[in-house]
Image 1 (spheres, one colour):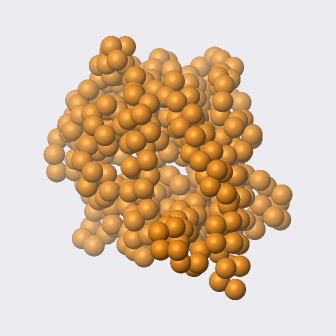
Image 2 (tube, rainbow, N blue to C red):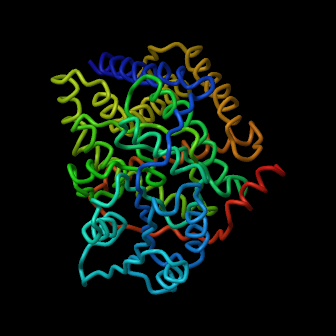
Length: 409
């Protein structure tokens, strides 16, 4: 019986990997640009920030320089429980500043800062609400692209995710490589298949009416993922914008990266337990493939945990000759999958903002992927722990400096 269960699990994992493999095939080639439309939509740019005086000025300057009529967008800085000069810098930059403070014992974090701002602002003045993190920089064409999408009827849009500091060290390179890989093999590929994309936490735009319909009720540690799934349950999928970019700063310290990714993993499990099965039910009853696809993504940490357990049993069998595990999938198939990923990373790196060595990129991605395994397992045990731990940002830079570094790479 145990042998039959293990073979069944191997088949399930093989199907799962096969599903992502088929999707990734549609990520090859050049992304089709959106049809350019005249500036029409009015936008609110929201920037939640907690003690971000080092980087917030760079972002506000950057947002004010967006290539879009100034009368058609407002910038709102949410100074969330700040004890530094974040709010003062916002006022010096002449943007809307909302200061938010918590009562003792009140839960803290980005979801609550967002809720506060959305309750305070009259959203009827806008067609689109865009969200950025304090450490971000965005390309000048961002609002033009969001305007194109809104006019085309798209209700949630996620722009291309990039990093400000991909070459700082091995850790930041791993983040950047995973971004380049996922932007093409997952986000672009799924958009071509007509499946829903995922909000990446920053650089996304939501149609104002959809905000009113759903409300901002996301309270998990991954509020972006939760909002994505809430929209999918209403039949609204996220769209991908390949040519508008947002850059964010990635931690250079491995421990800090683990803390950040543990928060993401806990939030992922939390959202999975809430929304995976409702999405599967919607997919079956409404014949909604985007809902099924959303559920598949939510269940992905489960695949990682099971695949890890299967790998451990495989190596026990290989080393000790124990017949606990009977490999059903031939080894050449695993080798082919590894080779495919190496080739795909090389293709994805053509999109890279900086020139990055292929071998170092693959090694860094392999390292960060394996380090995720214990984080996913520990997050499963502790997913109810909703403690928001701030990621410190220290890299003050302008978009011009980022682009200059790209050109000299």
